[in-house]
Every structure is written in C-alpha cells, then in structure tokens.
Length: 241
Ligand code: HEC
Image (cartoon, rainbow, N blue to C red; front, side, top):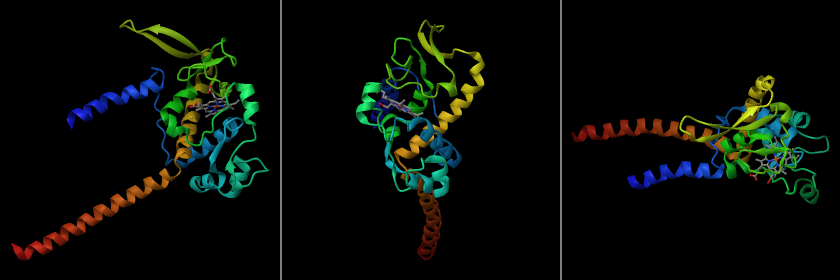
C-alpha cells in the first residue's frame, strides 16, 4: 500500500508537467465560493472570450442564480439585448468561418477547466508572448503554436521570451514584459485572470458550489451526531459497569 501511494506521489507532478510542455504551472489561487470574483470573471468571459468561444452547456439563468445576479443584472451586464435569460451561452460565429480565420474552431469552453485544470488555464492566459513567426504574432508557453490571438494584450502588455541559465547550468525560459511601464497593468491583469479562471472552474461544474456547502453541513451534522451517540453509549454502559 505504502509503495502504491509513493508511486502515485511520484507520478502526479509528471502528469502535470507533461500537460504543460515542461513549464511549471502558476497557481491560480482561486476560490469558487468567492462570489465577487465569479461575477468579475463572468464579465470578462462574456466581454473577451465569447466573441469566439461558446459555453453551450451553461445557461445565463443558472449563472445568475449561482452568482446572485437578478435577471436585470444579467441582461444589463452579461447579455446582448436579443438574448433571453433561459438561453445557453452560445455564440453566433459560424464553425466554418472560424476555421477559415483561425485554422481551427475555437472550442466550447463549458468544461475546459475539467479538461485542462484551473492552474493550467490561469498560466495559459499569462503565457502569451511575441513571436513574429506565428500568424497572430504570438505564441504561448504552455500551448505551443497556439491558434488563438492574445486577445487581452491591451490589458496585460506584451511579453517576450528570454532564455536564461541558472546557477546549475539549466536553461530556463522566462517571460518578461517588453515595456517595464506595463508592470502595474500586468499585476492587475493577473488578478483579472484569477477571476476568469475562477469563473471557468465554476462553469465546468456549477454543482460544486452546492456540493461544497452541503459537504460542510454534512460534516457538522456528523459531529453533532457523534456527540449524541457518545452520550447514548455512556448511558447504556452505566448499568453494565
Ligand atoms: C479571436 C478569437 C478568440 C477569442 C476572442 C478568444 N479565443 Fe481562445 N481560442 C481561439 C482559438 C482559435 C483557439 C484554438 C487554438 C488552437 O487550438 O490552436 C482557442 C483556444 C483556447 C483555449 C485552449 C483550448 C484547448 O484546446 O485546450 C483556451 C483555454 C482558450 N482559448 C481560452 C480563451 C479565453 C479564456 C478567452 C477570453 C479571455 C479566449 N479564449 C478568447 C480563439 C479565441
């Protein structure tokens, strides 16, 4: 058993590294019970991602209920006027047009957090860098030769890739801002991307919110129940002793 656990522990970093092309993932440090963060993430998703990506398994109304937004909040902040709150977060872009423009269709992002993991998504959004050999002028450290433009470049500022060698002689690829003056902007961008990753994780499993709060209630119930069971046990055994 111990050996099995050890093998598992050794394997896990291997798996994460394999999926990120050897790049260490940055921790999103997100919290899906943070409503303000989810609301901010939802807004970013609608404004910056839904031009190309749909979330066909998610309904606006469900998002509204889970995030504490009224139907009016929804229609004012997250939707275009022609949509109804009961509709799913679909987009009008034609699959064939998309393929012609980008070479590949931008995938539906409803369950992307389950496929990629939240830290990967966070790191992905922070890892676009200038690469003049690519059609959009950008590449991505965790998604080599990505077909997506850096749609948030204005929020983050451009980054470039530099190779450095550490004291042990290992080569390291690092992203640095092209323009130092964008530093504050880039810090704010990280916070925004944490919120966006948070929303993507929520979308992947909306029931998680309820499940987690239910989990605490169940544990509380078990603790109280344990108290009763113990008192009962003492009561029964008093006569026996
Ligand atoms: C201009 C169109 C466009 C916009 C806007 C856009 N994307 Fe993309 N995205 C793409 C395309 C095209 C791909 C496919 C890239 C590929 O497979 O090479 C993609 C791929 C992705 C992937 C990788 C999916 C995978 O294969 O695992 C993620 C994650 C992603 N986008 C997230 C986002 C997020 C989050 C936003 C909003 C901040 C966004 N995208 C905005 C076009 C777009």
